Amino acid sequence: MAGSVFEVPYAESVRMLTQQAAALDNLRSRASTILAAAALVTTFLGAQAFAKLNAWGWAAIAALFGVLGCTLWVLWPWKGWAYGQSATQMIRGFEAVEPPPDLERVHRATAMSLELDFRNNEVKLERLSWAFRLACILTVAETALWIVNLESLT
Image 1 (cartoon, rainbow, N blue to C red):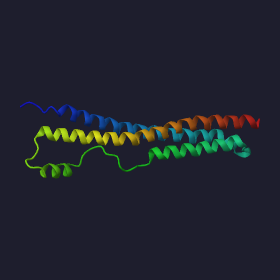
Image 2 (image 1 turned 60 degrees about the vertical axis):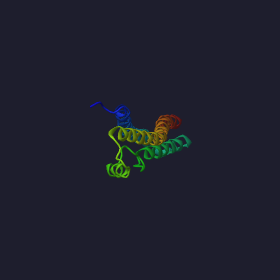
Image 3 (image 1 turned 90 degrees about the horizontal axis):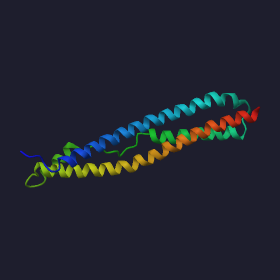
Image 4 (image 1 turned 90 degrees about the vertical axis):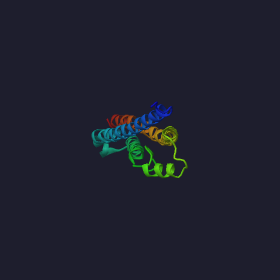
């Protein structure tokens, strides 16, 4: 028996969602690394400057809080991510149609639904990516501000 012409789009939509879920996991992993790096910078450079904080030191602390906010935004377990279909809902939906759809229609409907999930997730993932980029920039700024703070104390 020949396969459905919609098998390829179905397989591609499943692959796209799988890669997207991996991208989210990777982004969260990198965000936690950035948070650890920013905390480490403050621990080493800030410890030397805490006795005499000037405006540069306060700006470095503000940058650290910015990193904290951005990374927590990325790491927060936001609801609404969709990486698959509910089997129960699919079955009920297909049972409600007379006559029941053939495999080709099931592949088509599922592929289209998964693509919609992918597009909705992509908007959320892009927002989180911007927060991650900002956290990276703030980490570099924090490091530079602590260095300027230490230089201004000598």
